[in-house]
Length: 180
Image (cartoon, rainbow, N blue to C red; front, side, top):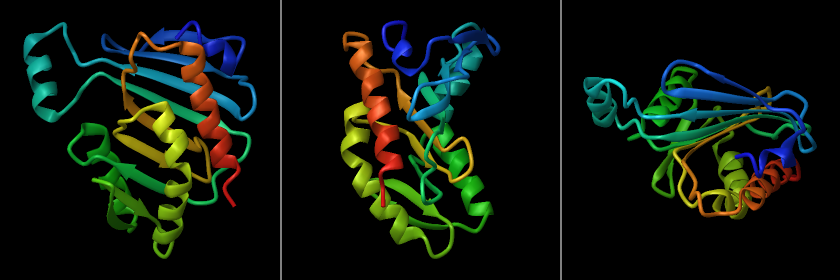
């Protein structure tokens, strides 16, 4: 993280939100971001029965980015894995808002009524930058109101160059702003 975060912004604040979640915030980020919150969500390891419960619920070590962008996306959408805890929660909330749903590449895509085709074409145009960031993800959320981008992925390979990895995150944020 240390090697790549300076690409996003000069100053990062860090705090623990309990025993298994750490938050890093860049309040004044560089373009294409305005603000970036990074959550490191660890499966609980300190109490064995919490660890077992998390395992049964599908909770895994997760890296979550919540970004306020300089250019908001044109469509609200949720793309999530319903077998992972964060995906189930997001899909349930979208369903309660009356959003439409369809399968998309083994995941569940949801969007406001009448916007499912636009959501799917948006995802198709973002497929390359998403793949560069992480070949697997559990949730990708776009919102016209902030945070504009939320993505939940497994922890990245620690042998990869952090500077390049955060460059891929920037490329995804730029691509969101460039969608017609």
